[in-house]
Length: 161
Image (cartoon, rainbow, N blue to C red; front, side, top):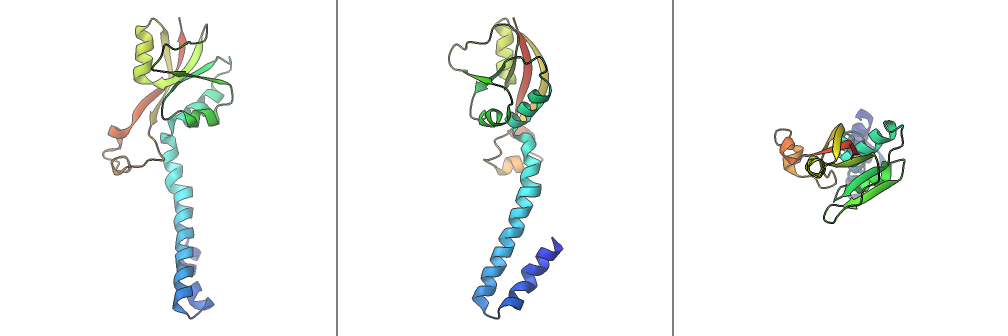
């Protein structure tokens, strides 16, 4: 980073004495520095809030019995589809869902798990995740003091009748 900062300040002067090319070079170097920071530090720290991908990786490592995996369709499910190693069943919450026969794993919000319990299913919570749509950042999420209010609790649970 120090070398890149040095390049930002002194490299444009060494290449050209014209002002416009110096401004362009400084802009390119600054963009490069910001991009490195965003990709290696900033977004890497936010990915733990992309609960669908975290849940998929957890399921990949903790499903030796190869139970069917079900997720409830909402705005956040695309990450799970990308990272899950086994076939996944997506059900819509607004219609009467058809679940696999027997025991299965499910990724959904805590509220959905509660509703399954009320429908007579046995729900054994295996892992809980905090979820936020990291591609739509808001100041209330970025502020550590208000972040908790922006998170949704999701779970991976073992479901049976």
